[in-house]
Image 1: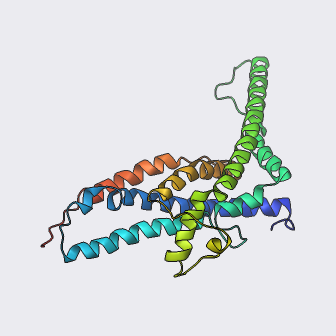
Image 2: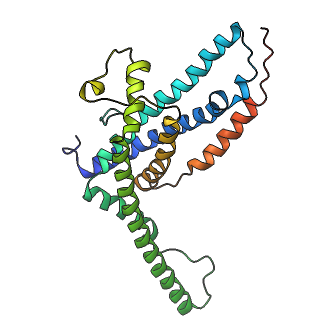
Length: 252
């Protein structure tokens, strides 16, 4: 798909798309935090008695659940130059030369400039020795980080391809294609082979499996660390503050 592009073009495009992928994924994480109360816990549902209002609540609950599934599927949709998703980033970087370049970028972050002493010795000779020691340490750490970059990029690529070939993703994507994105009698996927129905919670397992992949790709493609776990904690507190504060008074 991207073989005609130069290494530099592929890396620049991967960086741009991975920035967007992280944004899209963080929205799914926010949706999931809210759905932990709306869909998965009885926090709200237990307050709704059998009533006309229950019908409206069921619509609200389904819509929240469905938009999480739709947005998560978009993260794992097919690779395409116009799409901002994990498979596209994987196709862009799954190349030995590109991985070497990304590893070299990581190494140069630590080795270029040789490092700077915070409190160098007043003795010029000692200061030079100290500076050389810092340079050696930075070079060693840079090599270690470059190796880690290559290892974790390959791990992210392999894990991504495992998910793309998994029955769980096929089930979730089939539900999206058949009932949410379109109204189909039979999907193309079902015409090729039987597809197991999506089970409640499959989207949660898919979300969890995606987290280390997104973190590793963003870290080593864009050269920036990001903790999705920290975002999850914040989103959960925000959702808890809202939904635990909601009280329904519904007449039967």
